Image (cartoon, rainbow, N blue to C red; front, side, top):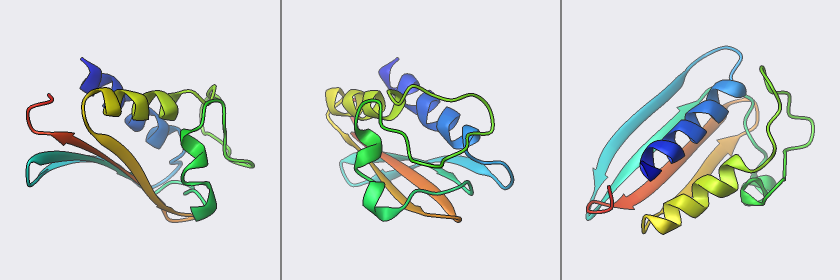
Length: 110
């Protein structure tokens, strides 16, 4: 249930900021962990904001979602749930090229 909530949040965000291109969900083993990866070809996030996006109510300045505007709670919530599950959530992103969110969980967490 918690895993589904995290993935739903990540996929919703990816779709919200990807006007053209693609959104992809994949999973792969990583030692004693499993990684769920949500990647998109959307607007991207400047490197200096990679940690800020996980702060409550923070929204990237100038970002223009395709549909709706969020509250700035989704990513902090997703990261908190990842921690509850014993894992972590990180982002790699380049403005204009897209973003990749990686959810790492112990194999026994889900």
